[in-house]
Structures are given as structure tokens and as C-alpha cells.
Amino acid sequence: MKQNKYDDVTFFAKYEKMPRSVKGLEGAGEWHVNLCKYLN
Image (cartoon, rainbow, N blue to C red):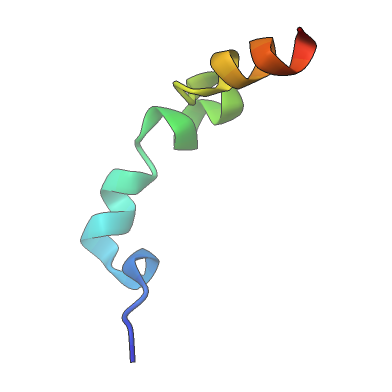
């Protein structure tokens, strides 16, 4: 059975500090590109 990475305490501790996790969509590097494509 596959292990869920989010159950790994070390992985989750680093993951929750990533810009996307902290700032939401504003922290997602690709978000502004997708938004521009959607609006045009």
C-alpha cells in the first residue's frame, strides 16, 4: 500500500511553510499566468 506523504511529519512541516501553503493562490507561481490566460 502506498504511503501518504502528508502523514510524514517532516514532509508536512516543510510543506506547510511553502509559499503556496502560506499565501494561497497568491503564493502559487503559476497562478498569475493562468489568470491572464483566463481573462484574455
